[in-house]
Length: 178
Image 1 (cartoon, rainbow, N blue to C red):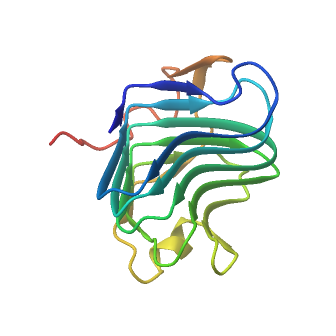
Image 2 (image 1 turned 90 degrees about the vertical axis):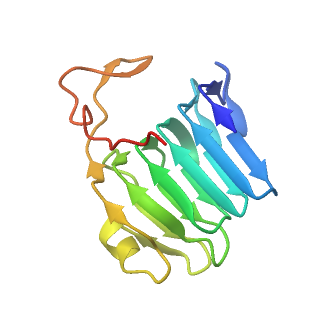
Image 3 (image 1 turned 135 degrees about the horizontal axis):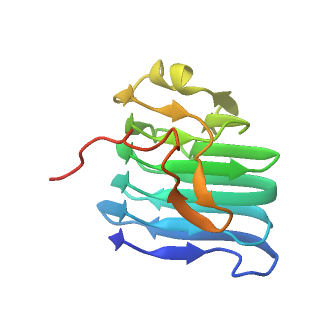
C-alpha cells in the first residue's frame, strides 16, 4: 500500500524518465491519497505502474509534464479500480490510463477528472488504439465507467495541487469509505 505520499519525479531538475509508484507482482496493490508530479519536464513520465493481480488507485493527483510521453496510470493488472483521481497531463503523447498488456482492463473508472488536451484518456497498448471514455466503456471486460469529468483541474496556485474553490472538480468524487 502507498498512502498519503508526495512524489516528485524530477526533483527540480530535468530527467530522462521517471515513475512515481511501481508495483511489481503480488496479489493486491493499493495507491491512496498520493500526489505524483514533476517540477521539471522529463522526456517520459508515469505516475503509477501496476503489475499486480488486483489494484485500487483512489483519491490521487497526477500532474505530469513531459517533452515526449506521459501516462497517469499504466495497467499491467486485471480489475484495477481507478476512483476519484485527478489526471493533469501535459505532453505531446499524454494519456490518462494505458493498458500495457492483454488482458489488463480496468475494473471501474469512476469519478475521475481528466485535463483536456491529452492525446487520449485511454490507450490500449496491444492494439495501439487511443480511446475516449465512451470507447473504453464499450470494451469487453471493463467494469463501471461513470461520473468522470474532462475539465481543467483548477488548482489553487501554480505549484499547489489543491483545488481552488471554483474548480469544476470540487465535490465531484464518490464516497470510497470501506
